Image 1 (cartoon, helix red, strand yellow):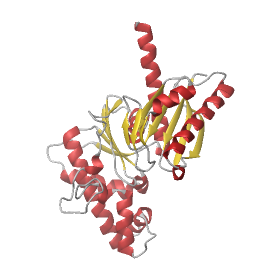
Image 2 (tube, rainbow, N blue to C red):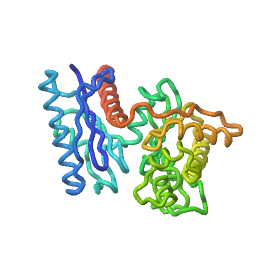
Image 3 (cartoon, helix red, strand yellow):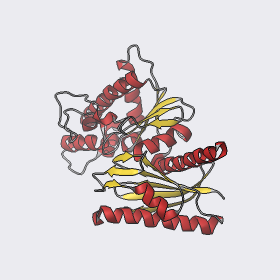
Length: 313
C-alpha cells in the first residue's frame, strides 16, 4: 500500500503516523522529544524515529514510504526546508528537510506546526468545504493559520497568521515579543490559568478549573472568563476585518470547554461586527491528530506536485 510518513514535533513529544492517500492513519506512534538532552539530540531522535517508521512501513505494507511530511514549532523556512528557530527545542537553522531526506531516501517537506494543523482542519476537519478559513488554537500561546482555497498562507517571511500578537489592550501587560497588550497575554489557556489562579488563590488552578467554575456559576470565574472572551473577540474581529474568512475554527486547550467558551464568544463577536460578515465560529474537529494529518497532507501534496511535473516533462 502506498503511504507517507507524517511527523508532528512538539515541545515535549512527537506524534507520528503512516498515512494513506485517502488520509487514513495506517499506523500511529508517539515518542518523547527529549529536549532536555539538547537540540542536537532532538534532531537525532527525529531522524531515528522517522527511520523506524520507514522500516515498519516497508515490513507491514511491502514497500517503503513514498515521502515524508514534518511539522515543527517555532520559525520555519518551509521553502528551504530549514527549522530556523525554536525557543522550546533550542535549535537554530537546522536543515531538517535535507537531513531527513538523506536518512530516508525519499522526498521530504517541512511545515510550521500551527499552519500544518490548520491545513488539516481546513481540508478534512472543521473547515472542510470552506474556501476561506482561519484556524486559531488557544494553548500556551495563540497562533493562527490562514486558509485560502485548500492551502495555508505562510506570508512573505513565514509569519502570516500570528494573531496572538495583535495588540488588544494597549495599556496592558508586556508580552515576551516586546509589545504591550498582545492577545495571547489575555486569551490563551496560559493567560486564563494565571488569572484564575490569582483570583481563586490556588496557584495550581488552571483554565480547565476556571471553565468548570464558570459552569457552576462562580462570579469570580465568570469575570475572569469573560475578560478572556472579550479580548479574544477583539482580536478575532480585527482578523476577520482583514481576512474575511467564511469559517473561524477555534482549537487548543481552551476550546475543550465547549459551549462554555463558544456561546459567549459567538455573542461577543456578534456584538462587535458592524459592516463585516459574521463567519461561522466552530470548534476544531481533529484534536491532537491535526498536526500529524496535516504533515501527511503536505507529503501527499509534494508527491502530487512531483508526479505532475514528471508527466509534463
